[in-house]
Amino acid sequence: MIEPGAQAPEFKLPDQDGQEVSLQDLLAEGRNVVLVFYPLDFSPVCTDQLNVYQEVLGELEAAGAKLVGISVDSAYCHKAFQDHLGITIPLLADFNAKGDVAKKYGVYNDKPGLNARALVMIGPDGVVKWSYQSPSPLEIPGANLIFDALEAHAPA
Image 1 (cartoon, rainbow, N blue to C red):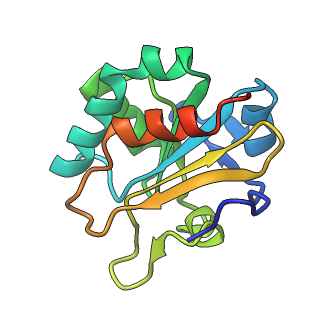
Image 2: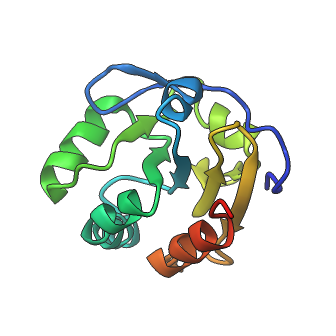
């Protein structure tokens, strides 16, 4: 998994609406970007994870974070998933080539062909400030981990 201090690999992926989104676009907002790598849309654990983050999204944004989900599903699947859950977190499709961005961040699991469940916080300068990978795909990284990382890396 990518380590803090590393330069975050650039990417350009379609979001749930088919719009191309790059890391550079996300960083242009001047906030910390938290990439939420998750295995699949519509799976029970991923559904729970994104619902948890949506519940505290306003607080995370107020703390200076921009959350973005990334999985190997297509943009069409992401749109259906987002609509089904009623979430506003942007979802990026790491679909073609499958898992290319997740591989660059060291969170792709080749055997099942899915992302690991991981969080990567990137500062406005494009440097990874913090990263976390769940020990099991069944373990949801709680929002408290993101809040703690934001607090630990807040400007002095």
